[in-house]
Picture 1: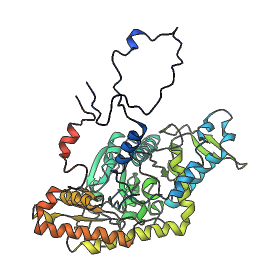
Picture 2: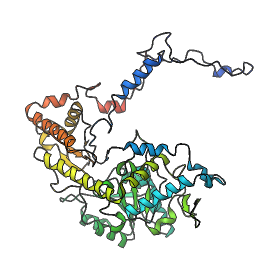
Picture 3: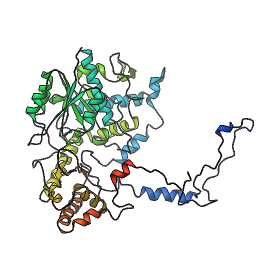
Amino acid sequence: MELIYEKSVAGRSGVRIPVSDVPKAAPLPEALRRTEAAGFPEVSELDLVRHYTNLSRRNFSVDTNFYPLGSCTMKYNAKVMEQAGALFADCHPMLALLPGGEKHVQGPLSLVHGLEQQLAEITGMDEVTTQPLAGAHGEMTGIMVIAAYHKARGEKRKYVIVPDSSHGTNPASAAMAGYEIITIPTAPYGDMDLDAYRAAMNNEVAAVMMTCPNTLGIFNPHIAEICEIAHQAGALAYYDGANLNAILGKVRPGDVGFDVIHVNLHKTFGTPHGGGGPGSGPVGVKKALIPYLPTPRVVKNTDGSFGVESHPEGIGRVSDFFGNFGIMVRAFGYIILLGGEGLIEVSEQAVLNANYMMAKLKGEYELPFDMTCMHECVFSASRQLKDGVHALDIAKYLIDRGFHPPTVYFPLNVKEAIMIEPTETESKATMDAFIEVMLEAAQLTRENPDALHQAPETMPVGRLDETRAARAQQVCCEG
């Protein structure tokens, strides 16, 4: 296959390759020798810099534009936290796992232990592990801890209960841990159907997995009762921390009955989302589940120093280290910077912004559950669908107007769903600009729906065949 490079010019170079230091007396085996040139592009350093710089300008990020992606909490990442992360760049706590290495990394071990204590206090849990490397990884870890707990008690439980508005990773994590899933529908009032939940609960249920507020942006007023029903059957209550940003300092999941929680540091504590990473999904548990947490764990010795210990009943390692340490540094700094009052203000501002957005848009867009929301609001484009315009068309139009689209078609129990989460970091001026474009899209739906069908028209690429793109990926050009 011949590779085609549009910017390559024969003879042009931006690098000088050093003379080989491999002794001629040790030639490569014939089978390892190239039979043809490697086919690299021939470009100058300036060509290269401009190419990648211009590609970066096509990227969309929370640093460049409003990013109201519902259920993802795309809040601004303060740059002072990036500076904090750099402080530990030359000091890796992995040394703690080497003989005598603990004394060289007391600072990092102290930070890991301190973050675990902070998260335990914020969530109402007794102990936390920072090992999981993502939210879904945290879910899997939490379910494994639950499974270990029931196994140690000699109980064989088969099921995990999840609401139909749950994140897709909830049933996936439970299924990967060997459980069968019982799905509970959403009641007309927007919460999990309590009667259906009661009917489904039995002594073969290992846990109920809840997101509260749920993916409709609604806080379930029956959450304490839901946890109590689980406990009466010997099951545990798992809190999906995806929406923890809505209740910081207001409600501690552990106080209303939850036994296990995972926390998305990138959603709640201002760390980067990354491109599939870096991530961090610490897991907190109540006292009865502490023995089953991943090991090894950081402990504080009686003399005030920090060490590492394992526990024989623990589920073992779930990552190579105590977690994604650079991300933990950023989250630790975020919590210290804001303090208790600051974290409360985060949740209050996030909820205020979402309700402002909801109030401004519900005149044009269908609101399936017309009530005070928490950190995000879920609309339906069902009114626009009558004119042939889908939620996807509105999302594509927003791209043309300089906004990242909100989440569409999720949660699955809302037809033509549009889920908007402004977060606490956005100003009223930014939200008003977004609202104006959303109202403009609704008006265009009535007057010129084809304008929405053609969007986006101002981007480097236009409307893509997304199904074909996913099934027929082509990562390079063939000559």
